[in-house]
Length: 489
Ligand code: BES
Ligand code: MN
Ligand code: ZN
Figure 1 (cartoon, rainbow, N blue to C red):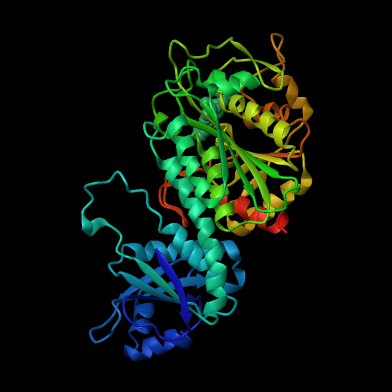
Figure 2: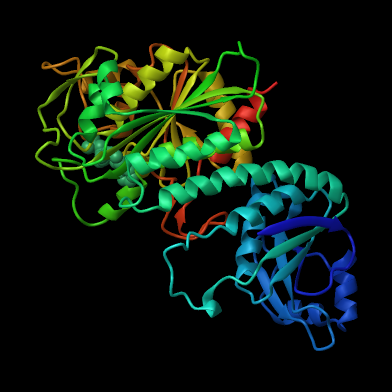
């Protein structure tokens, strides 16, 4: 989608969008357009059930003689209630209404006081993404028609400059969506690692460790998860050095289970196809690195992803197996489906041990229980740092990638203590997301840490304002903003 900004003048041709406030008459360019077509917009508003509620859309076909194809009235409700996330979501809703409308070009007139045209544009761009590479028979008549949007604003140059940064971040979001949408016969640990190498063209240093290297490092927790797979497990380390050479890095770690069958503790068949996006944590981390490198963020970042496939086979790990993690701590595997924490514990230990980061943030589609707790609105945030938690909560509200803090407490530790080894890899039926976080905490070596359980937010079964059904790219904009606001100089 080509998005640009132009000055505030009456647009012509294609689809034209006017923003309409609730209980207010048309003003400015909308009023001009209404009189140019003899009050057709007023009539449409009067005879329809359009109340200008936020996100409501009324499409009016332009009368003969008009240069436009159609005019869309888009309700904003009460503009005074708008924050950044609402502008972005509105941009997404407008985009959704325009994509299949039949016109190739659209103009959005953004002349309301305090309107955030840059966020509106960002939302429109984010919503235009489609994963359709395997749809070879879709008729032209069903494909989106829209190719470009022009936003008419008071200060087009300022908007263009700010938008260019958002566009780069959206490139990271789209990379994440591509990765999580890809089926597991295409995206496996080895092909995923190859895909990540493409980031080197942006100046990212990419290092790939295979099984023999990980074996030498003692990563038997991670290796155990992948030992039933025909693909070799991989640990990929990305480094973006946008700050001074001696600047302590910040770090991100992602769970990259390219398919989670559950292993010998096999998952039920219904819905198992969803487990192709069990690499969503890694996908988000990779998209984030792309975003940061594309916009040349002034920060040093280390990002590590553990890529494995969890399969049942004659070589697969068994319930009852005991593994020794890189940290030296031993783990009894009581359920091979609780594999994410086994991948992360070695990736996290390795990251803090080698890079001594300022802090470590891990992302993982870790537990079904977080969906029970928070549904698909908020990701679960677990942290021993009030400061990091507050910074992430703010970035979440602003970007719309919302997080909700959940508790950690040593009393939960007894749920994963075990007589056979230092710990077991499952708690019990109670507090499933918290015991998983409590497990990870044992591998932070006291480096300030945040765990984001994104099992409920990586994928959506329904269309959302900023993405259609499928991968959401959740977390890329959240973390990009968190970095921009707190860790760049
Ligand atoms: N990848 C799953 C968690 C998950 C479930 C993500 C649904 C997205 C949607 C994870 O590996 C898993 O299987 N967790 C188990 C843990 C249990 C065995 C302790 C779960 O949540 O049931
Ligand atoms: Mn699992
Ligand atoms: Zn999993």
